[in-house]
Length: 362
Ligand code: PMP
Image 1: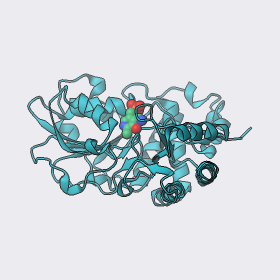
Image 2: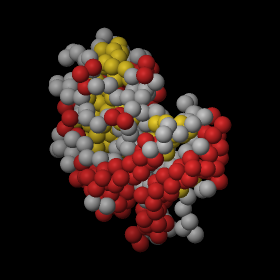
Image 3: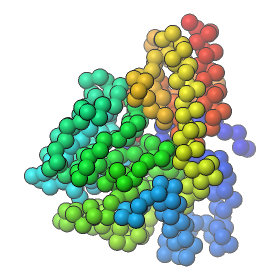
C-alpha cells in the first residue's frame, strides 16, 4: 500500500514518494539492462550516465561555478570533520570554527588532532539557542579556513546570512539544510553534506570544493582521504555508493520538477510557519528552543509546558501516527524535522494535532 507515515525523522528522513515509486519501478530492470542499478558495474555505461547526470543536475540547481568540483564520497558528514583538517590544516596553522551546536563540537574535536583551533564565535553559553551575529565573528586573515555548521540539526538553528571571509576559505557543513534553499556557492571554499536528510538515502556524502584548494592540500595523507584523489577520478577512484547516487539523481530531478531551490525554499517556509505559529500562539504551552531570528526551517525544536505533558504529548503523537518527534537523545524535548520531502499536509496535520493537544490539556 502507499499509506505513508507522518514522518518527521531527523535523518535518515522522508524521501519524496514520487522518487521512491520511480525507484521501485526501475528496481529489477533498469533501462532494459536486465538488472537493477545496484547490480551493475560502476564502470558501465548505464551507471556512468546516472553518475554524471547527478553531478550535472546538482551543478545546474546551484549554478555551481566551473572552478568547483562536485564529489560523491562516503563516510558521512562525520568523515568530513576529519578530511577537512587533514587536507587543509597544518600542525602550526590555525583554523577558526564557529561553535553553534554538537556537530560543530564534533568537527572541532577532529580539527584539534591536526592543528590549532580558534573558536571564532560560540553560542554555547546560550544553550545554542542562536546563531552568532556576523559582527561577533573573530577570525584572522592567516587562518587556514573558517568552518560553520549551516543548520544545527539538534538545536534547531540555521544561518540566514553567511559570514564573508574574503581570502580565507569558508567551509560549511550543510548536512541538514543542503538543497533546501538557494545558496551562492562562490561564497564558500567547501560545502559538504551527508545525503540522508534532503539529498537521498544515507551512504553518499556530497562535497562541493573550489579547485584551487585541491592544489593547496596537504600531500602526506592516505589516498582515500585526499580530496584530489576523488576529484581526479570523477569520484570513481573506487566503487562509489551507486544506488545512493542514483537516488540522489532522482531527488534532484524531483527538486527541478518542484520549481528549483527558490520554490523549495518557499514551500519550506510555509511548512515551518505552520508549526512555529502554533508555538508562538500557544501562550508558552509550547516553547521554542531557538530564538526567533535563528529558527531553522528544517528542524523545529520545542518543549511542552511541563515534563509530564511533554511525555504525554510524545506518546499521543505517536499514537496518532506521527513519527520521529522526540528531540535528539542528547537534549530531549521535541523536534519536528521538516525537510524538503515532508509534505505540507504532514506539517498541517502536526500543527492541528498540537492545537488539539493544547486545548485538551492546558
Ligand atoms: N553534521 C550535521 C549538521 C548533522 O546533522 C549530522 C548528522 N545528523 C552530521 C554532521 C553527521 O553526519 P553523518 O551521520 O552523515 O556522519
